[in-house]
Length: 403
Image (cartoon, rainbow, N blue to C red):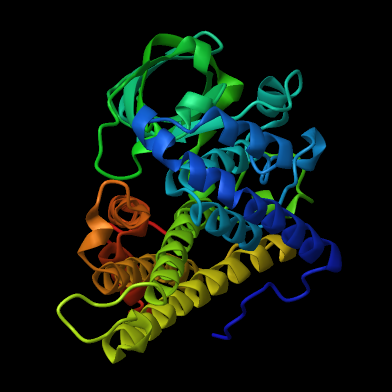
């Protein structure tokens, strides 16, 4: 397979949009960094951050252009959330999740999309894919009850998409899907009490016999087969494979966290020495030089893997093709390995920075905690990704890994 870091045939307009949106994200880094302690303490994104994200359009990266969104590709999404994470990992995480759910909403039918955005194009969608619920057929739709944990972005959304199992009269499960529900029909339980990504507010959303009209249901099995309900077949973004896009989406914040840690160490290395040594500047110590070089290379590796995967997905959408199993498995492998490389870079840099990085007022310890927690997201489990890729390479029957 060839390696591409941007989709072949990317237009000037696409690259201009990417440059503009990434520039907006970069301009917010000082604000996000200043608000990071508040975001952690209050366990939700600071209001100033949300207002700034709204003003710069970064909460509408993947919304269909028909509703005023940017309809931006995955390379752009990675670069934007990477920049945001340099200032605040929690904010970047919420942005990537709200945008991936907007992308998924773009795969629904026209009526469902109209429900979400026609009257209020600024509406945001959070979501949980896991079908931890029940769904009973009713006249014109379904009655849904359930609890969906770790719903990142739910504190800043107006709609939620959640996984449901369809159950036949005989108790069989003919399909698994997702439904769109207004947040006003749900309750939020404050359950996100984690050591990292503390500001994401990834709480539990609860439905108690909520009626969902049939047009707000989409089949996951159809999405996994590359089929969507979006009637606007010319919209390249919503032709990208559901599982591949959902997997790659969470990598951007990891890239930014690692870069933020590298920036901290480089800045610190010229200002402080190493205790119990003769080095008055860390920058002069070979041990620090080697650590910085290794971490920078790991970050480069993570970025190259992530951008290669984004190039594959953006190209598939542009050409209207559904990538084969091997290509999809490689995307999952790339995403998992990118996260592992970024996380390892942070670990190297924490040691190079020294024990002072674990002070409560240090940005380094927050970056470290955020990286350790977010990198455990199920979609980027590196071993499951390797299993899928190995099976695809060998032509073996797929097991538990979904691509």
